Length: 241
Image: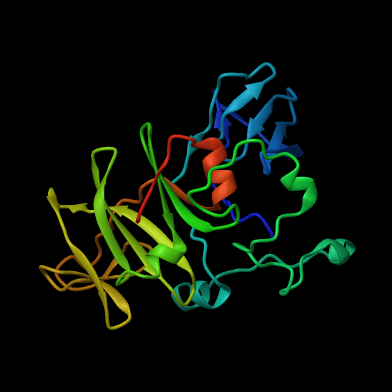
């Protein structure tokens, strides 16, 4: 399996733009170092835990979508793609190797995991949502059993979680728009506001209807395997039975 936990942060701290390198693995997840002080950071949380910057944290950015290339290209046809570097071709994963959410966990990763929770299998893929101190996991397998939309409060915020099974894409937004909580539904291949019939895309943009041009606010989240999400959010709740 490969790690699915892509997450983004503002790299600027106290007016300095930090750059990072890979240090090692803890609980199956990456540890990074900043190149100017050597301080160590957790990629899952953006928090520094050792070195001159210990106790500091980067600001998370509610951006990025874990999806397939076909799904991304459909919604962003003019996307530029980073070309592979032929010098490192042998290090790249093949299509067969890059199976996120697989039950297989490489021994060198498994050996670092000391915190385990039986509510889900280690490699179960999920959307992890954070609102203040509240953390909640939405397993893809359970989202696939819904009609594509889950709406509930997390940390006091009314959220709407959308899931597209074909591309295994899960996103979460604040369900409030123009000061009112909206209820959404998936139908006709899209996501719609139930009251106005306005259609939204997976970026939260209204592309048709009375809210055209407006956009729902993303809620901080990331796609991850269960082992990584639980390691960093041991008090997390889990959606579903």
